[in-house]
Length: 239
Image 1 (spheres, rainbow, N blue to C red):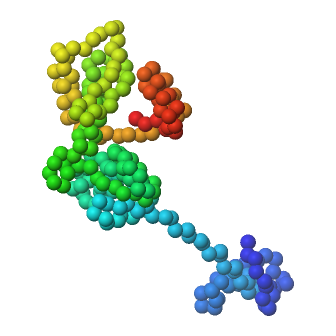
Image 2 (cartoon, helix red, strand yellow):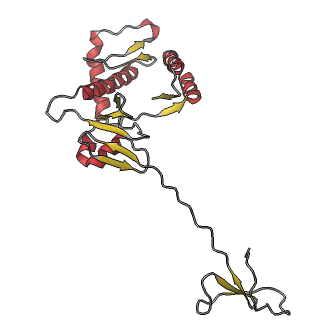
Image 3 (cartoon, rainbow, N blue to C red):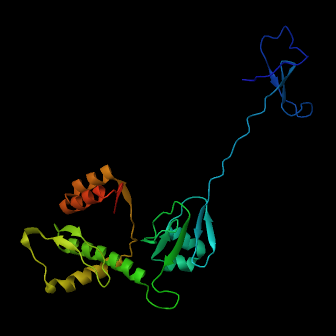
């Protein structure tokens, strides 16, 4: 609909309907001819664009990277260089001057932060303790998958990395007990899993969806762990 005040020239009285004619040579900007009369088209409201705040990432050397949306630790590494992105294992993230948190590359950073990318070795060539911790965490998952492949029915309990090694508590079906005789077979299966070169992917689910997933898997111990996480204040469950 055109809302405007009609100018001097009126439409012919005999006209039974309105016709619209546009002529770039005779019309001024914002005008059209309707049935012989001039009408001014109102200007559309100007769009208001609100600038989205940038996420500022401060690196160890003091330089700053800005992102239009919350980047992952991996995206921060990629913004520094392709070589670093390839060798990155995780990151140390500190927000608001708080103690830094060791995170994986999929961790998303939603506010300004200080970020240090973790690689296998530090700048001075020494082995990074953070890298060892992350690798041991990954190895615990690989070992658990290998054992579940070899011994169907095994239930996983808890498997954290430690400062010097890693482990996984498990419940074997029918009272079966693992011994040192099984280690070689487990290590061989772990090597096969590593050779598959699958990416480690973490994802999060809302509490209700996560609990439903665990119930469907029949994982009693994982359900217990999840319930403790909820009681401690977690709003999501991660895999």
